[in-house]
Image 1 (cartoon, rainbow, N blue to C red):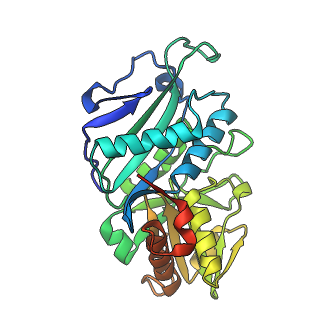
Image 2: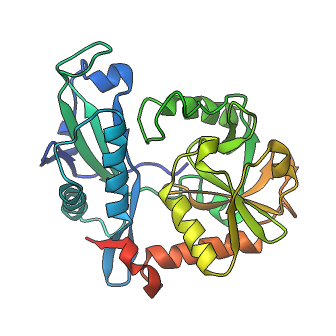
Length: 306
């Protein structure tokens, strides 16, 4: 995984503070109970300047996630977008990873957090390919995790901090066993997603991805890829995917803000297709890169210039 580089400033509760001063108290509610919501966003060097890819859409999802957990963020979507731009500019980044997080702080310690104050931070740093540059070029090895994705009747379909311990278990198992990433099945035994990515399967020139009801996050990169490939003439369908379907696929690739479009060359010690990156995956990588850098006029509305 690409290393994380520190920055000069962090936006914390409405102000820019030095990186080393962006701290919270040990009695922060979110530290004890995982009561927070967050996003991952990338800013790219695009045609016309640095731009956050679907920055506004990410902040809208952050607000929805917060609402699902009864968290009233004291900033509007527009204010959060402006704050993200502010911290990227302050750190003088031409490209960056942006991490907004809203969480419950001091004021309560227990399972009734209504008296806890809500805090928010926006952190930005320069982060390379989440699953490695070689992974982007040649594909990664994945395994089906022994840990199942939590059921959506247990948690809202939101990007919440506490639920990611489920993903951490799967990721650590995969890496310990010599793989790059994990695939997680839902309680019914069908594919949900990766530990932190959505999955796409290609078979007989049709592209499939699990429906949200399978337990996957409503990924913004997922939505972007579905739109881009459909507009490019491909047939893209949401469909329940079994573990066996993985072994019969011609291509597999994973998507996410951090992972972007990462090919899968091997799953459970079985080569995917020819064991090399396939043409649909390469096309997905190409049009996604063109969209997030402003090279495709039809998708410049996805860019928030910084």
